[in-house]
View 1 (cartoon, each protein chain N blue to C red):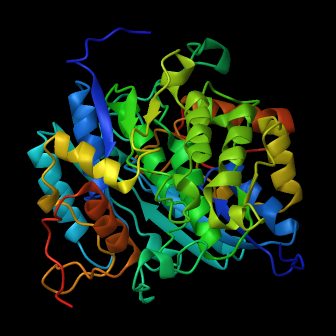
View 2: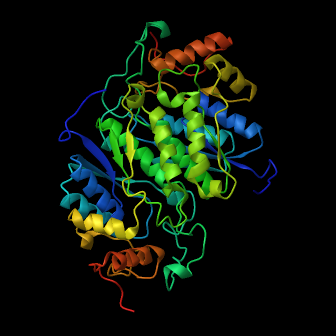
Length: 235
Length: 235
C-alpha cells in the first residue's frame, strides 16, 4: 500500500452533467483530490448532458475529462436511448409507482466498471459517483446495498485490489435529499446554471419542468429555499 | 418470474474469438439457448480477435452479434491496448510469477456489465462467459470468487432482479483445464481453426507460439492429444 498526500491523490469522478454529479465532483475536489472526470454518451437523444459535463469539468479544474461512447441502443429500446415518450407528471405525488420507463439497463454497473478501469490505469484509488437513495426514483442501481455490493466486487476485481490497495467507491450523496445536495453544492460554489437534469428538453435546451428529473430538481430547490437558475419551458 | 421453454431462452455469450469463448458458446447452444453474441473492440493492436469472433458467431448460428467499441486506450497504457512488448517464454514454467503485463484493468467487469445490459434489454436471463480459474494466469477477474461476487451484484443491479428474475452469470469452464476445454469443444464440434488466441501474431495472422496465451493453448492441445489446426510462425 502506498501513502499519498491529499494533494497528490487522484479521483475518477463520474460526471453526467446533472447537479448531483457536479456536487459530487465539488466534494471530491474539497477533499483534496485532483479530478479525472468520466462521462458517457450512450445513445441519449440529445447531447446537452455532454455539454453540461464539459462545462462542469472545466469549471472545477479537472485534470482530464474522458468521454466514452457506448452504443446501448445496439441492444434495443429504452426511454433515454430511444423513442419512448418520457412520462410527464403534474407533481411528484402523481407519478406511477415502481421502476420508471427511463430506467437504463445496468447503467451504473457499466459506468462504475469503466470508472474502475480508468482509476486503475491512472493509479487512482478513488471513484466518486453521485447516486442517492433518498430520491431513489425506483432505480435498482442507486440503492445503498447496490453500492456496497459493487465495492465488494471492486475488492476482488483489480490488480490494485490483489496488491492490497483496492479502489474505493465513494458515493457521498447516497443518503442526501435533493435539497441537501443543492445546499451542499451551493456551499461548495457549484454553478447550477451549468447543470442539466431534464429528460426531455426542447430544441432551445430548456427544461420541460414536468419529467421526473425536473420535478425532483424543482422540489429540491424549493425545499432548499433557492432559485433554480436554469431555464424552463414557460407553462 | 416467467417460465420459458429451453427453445425460447436467449443467452448473451461473451465472445472474444479465443477457444474458451467459442467452447462456452457451443455449451450454451447445446443447453438449448439461442445465442446473442457480444464482442468488444477495446483498443487491441489487431482485429484478428474480432474476425475470429465473427466467424465463430456465424458458425454457431447466433441470432445477433453485437460488437461494442470501448476506448480503454483513452485512460492510458496496457499491453493489449498499447505498445508494451508482449512477454515471450520458452515454456509455461519459465514465466514470471504474478499478474502478467497483459492484464487489462477491470476488463471482465466491463464485459459482464455490458452483457448484463444486453441480457436485460433482450429479456434474456443468462450470460455466458468463458473464464477459467485453472489456467488462471494471475488475472484477478478470472477467479471463482470474482464470478460469485459479480453474481451477487447482478442479483441487485437490474430491474429484472428486482422483479424476481435476476440474470445468471454462467461460467461453465471455470474449473476446466485447457485440455478439458479443448476436449469439450471437440465433442461439441467447435472448429478450432476459427479461433484466435495469440497476443502477438505476425502480419499474416500467424500465432507467435511463445506468448502466455499460445503456451497455454499449445500445452492444452498436447495434453488433450490433439493437433492445433491454427498456423504458427515457424521457429
